[in-house]
Image (cartoon, rainbow, N blue to C red; front, top):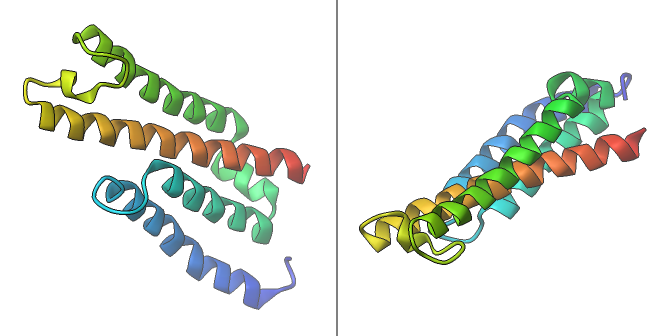
Amino acid sequence: MTDNLVLRVVAKLLIPPILLFALYVQMHGDYGPGGGFQAGVIFGAGLILYGLVFGTHAVRSVAPPRLLAIIASLGMLLYAGVGIASMIAGGSFLEYGALSLDATHGNHVGIIIIEIGVGIAVAAVMTIIFCVLAE
């Protein structure tokens, strides 16, 4: 793709709004449609577009495979950590209301942390799958 100037310029213009839209979907997922999985897929798609246009070596320089594995693991740890924290607080696994004295506040905080964990895990795993299949 090094000789296709139009594609490279359009990709450079589109990738930042794609990543920004992923963050928007992530942060507004508990108020409307969207959430962690959708945001992770959109963010991963932005990184995959970057890899398709500029090469997998470019993606590996931005997000090395070891870093992606750590990020995916961190997302899963966030998810499981909220469940374990709610059990320690006296509730069931992923019973967010137990995370705070005010159940509404606990639900809100728990869902946001869960969605962030899912989002970063999905984005990292999608990018890992792309890099593996591109080899």
